[in-house]
Length: 186
Image (cartoon, rainbow, N blue to C red):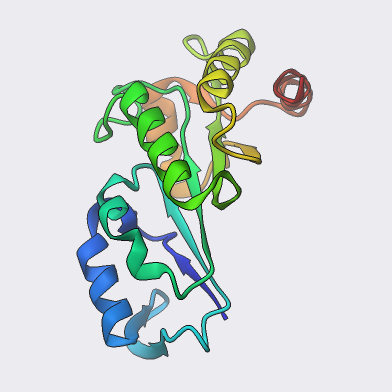
């Protein structure tokens, strides 16, 4: 079984003690998001868990206790993009996050830290050139600390339409996606 931690909230950033307690106890209860009355108990022993995938924008709170995961296979999907506090208000600065990325890589290896440059959107403050410049800057900072980068574009879910409009951003059109993808791949 692959344990995905976490798509609903950033457990590495906000609930690392809870997670380590679940590992120590060997189980976790998970509520079905579509049926709040349905709760499943999941065993967390290494003989059941094939791999743990951590999704985070700031896994720094997990770093002091990573040795508690030595019996498990795991890796991190670390989202690091160029947006400032107007977009991501509750995160440390980008240089602090880049240093966290490096410390994580130093502790568990660059093969276990995948860089996510996500989501990519465009607007007056975020043109194609902005992404090319910022991606190159971040790539230079992270060189040697990861073996893989994944980038993706903003998916305008219905529940974020109001926010997208307020920020004056939008997902790039197909032609712009191709242009950005080509620039980032260089």
